[in-house]
Image (tube, rainbow, N blue to C red; front, side):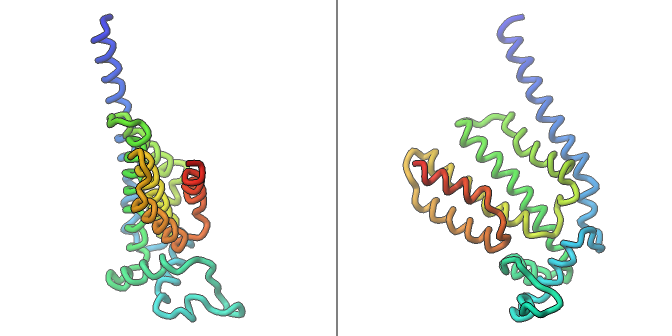
Length: 210
């Protein structure tokens, strides 16, 4: 077989792999996407987050004293975001699910952009990265996919920060504007959920090892 023929076969296999990944994502996403419109909470987290979001206008109730019947050990930013948007829509749980789905989609986009930065070139095969991210969350992590929970929004902010740092490095010189923005995004992410530490720690390592 000629080199041209082998190259064509390799290109065909690559396109088939990309297509199979995207089709698998679409098939597995059908039920979770329909569940977004279910008005019943299918995880205790959703009800707990909706309850706290409804209290965002009352700090003394959002963070009651230690003798109260309920307690809240989460940062406030997510509850403010969910509370404001939930008041507009009238459904805190639905809004939370939409926020999570949008966050997952944007994280996948950022994974693709990070792959391009690392590879140094654009290629269709780099769609496998975000595709595998979706597949993992639609299989092993399916119960958390598009769940009304601060996890996804916090991960979006910290992933965005990582992308900005890598973009600064890829430029060949330190872009302090990108790095300041990355630091702000990390702080916002931690104000949404306090235990999203993996990427902030890795980002700190990138800066420290320069």
